[in-house]
Image 1 (cartoon, rainbow, N blue to C red):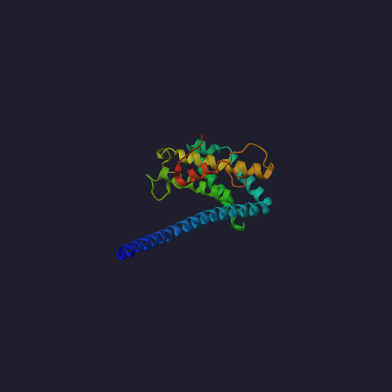
Image 2: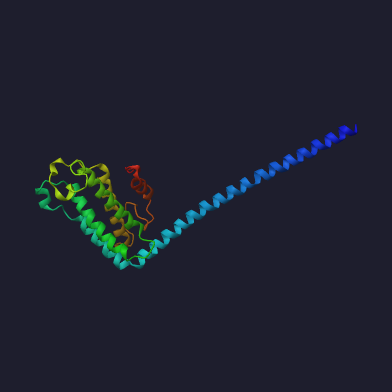
Length: 218
């Protein structure tokens, strides 16, 4: 009988110890999960703070920002030069030339802007770089160094421009349009929703395209 009592006590103590061990093992998991949630929230908060600071920096240089956006608008609205048409170039080559001018204007502005730089103008510059790359792709089979774009020795053999080149130019124009509405029209007017400055509703669509996700618009 004494042995039976001792055995029962041993089983009971073992059960308690296992229970404690299970509680001790499961508790840290909850802590890790909570810490992970805190980290995600902190990252989101940091991103929002960076965008707020970016907007403030941009608006502190509003006079210069207005100047550069007006310059970009003029470049993008210029009709295609007749000499290019006569030489047999297509409109996409004209867009390439304009995107290079746009990139130079943006670089000059960003060079003097405090960090964080304007996300919208950085996107314009990235789109201009994409157009430059896609123009190279059109001519790489003729000269893989990229020289054909400037040499123009076999324009009639250039590949057709890709849809991505078309969409890159479209988004560039849309960003400039929305910046013009924000800066010169007090944010009043129709927009495409593709700027951080105006908390655009189509920023995810733009980001997806720029990250290689293809055109998601309608």
